[in-house]
Image (cartoon, rainbow, N blue to C red; front, side):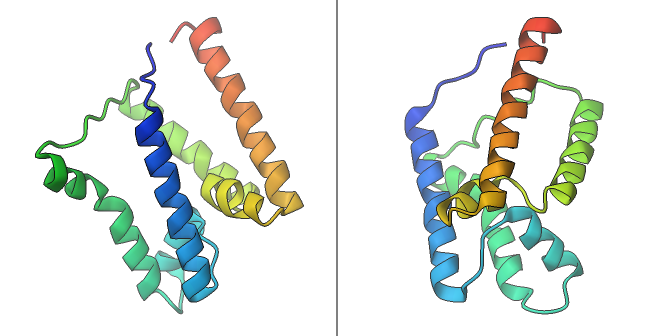
Length: 141
């Protein structure tokens, strides 16, 4: 399996995520954690409009890319649908036990120097590296 190295696109995307997080904090005083936004948009009882607006922005990115370039973004998913479902289930469990996701802890929590977010981000990074090593070098994926 080969990983495409895309430093400019990654830098632009990371910058946009950071900008969105800062703007949300400046305008509404809220932390931009994607899973918290999603769960409160679906099951929350108050302030749901801004959450749905952010979710709409998150999923409209490919359409904006199409409008700018004339092509849909290339997306390759090198695993099966059952593997995606199992992975999504495991991420959901991790988000529940970790009290947040990578965007909430890694972007916003780290910026606030939150000890809980620093510990969570270290765990994310450790297990990400371990997963890549196991799947690429031990299993041979």
